[in-house]
Image (tube, rainbow, N blue to C red; front, side, top):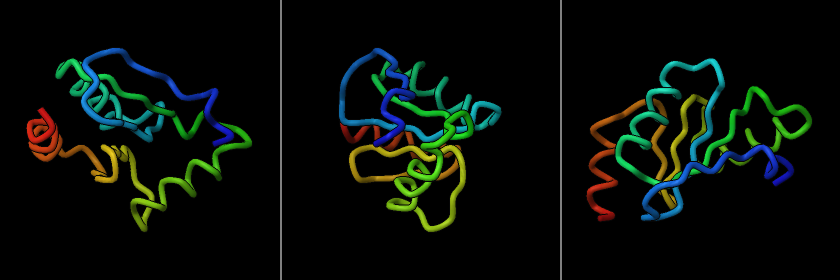
Length: 97
């Protein structure tokens, strides 16, 4: 991961590995971050649009989970949620508790 130094870790309750691929200007990405923070969860994210040389690598990593790139992409262990899907996010989080 060449973009490891660009990853931001948000403190909270650790349930599983929660990672979010976002765009810095995306309203849905901001809503997803806000939801995860509201739920008090620890998660990490990277703003893909702010990456310079490592942007292609981040997109390659995203393609491991989805065929068409869309933001936000939330990865909880090996489960991925593309787009802002509040009910689905809450459902998966509740299963982990």
